[in-house]
Length: 166
Image (cartoon, rainbow, N blue to C red; front, side, top):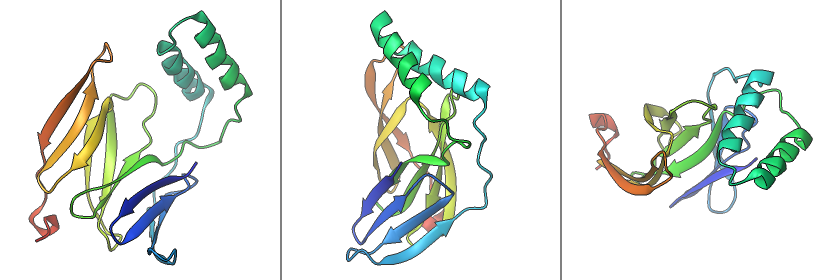
C-alpha cells in the first residue's frame, strides 16, 4: 500500500508498513522523515471477521457477497493493521494523517503534522465523512448517512494559536 499527498513544495509518501512518512522535494530528494513511536494493532481472527462482515454489509446481492467472501479467502493476511490509510494536506500545508479505522469504529482519528515534521495536533471526525477541503478555520467534507445519502458538511476548525500560520 502506498499513501501520498502533495503540498506545494513536497510530496508526502508512506507505505503503511510502519509509523513512518517521508517528505520528498519536487526533485524527488528526501527532505524529511516523520516517525511516531506508536504500537501497531495486530490482525486477529476477530478483526478479520469484523472486516469481512463490514464489507458484506455493502454487498448489493448474493453474487457480490460471494465475490467478497472469495476475495477475503484468497487475500494474504498481514500480521498488523496499517497505521494509516489517508493523507490530506490543508491550506496551511500541514499533513493530516488519517489513521486506519478498525471495523466497527464510528470515528476516524487524524494526526496533524506541520511542514517541519512536528505533530501539532490530533482530531477526530465521523468515519463516514470524507474531508474535501481543510482551510485555516474550517473542514468541508461529504458525509454519508446510514442510507448512503451524501451531504456536504462544514465544521469550524479551532487551531491552537501557534499553528494558525500567517
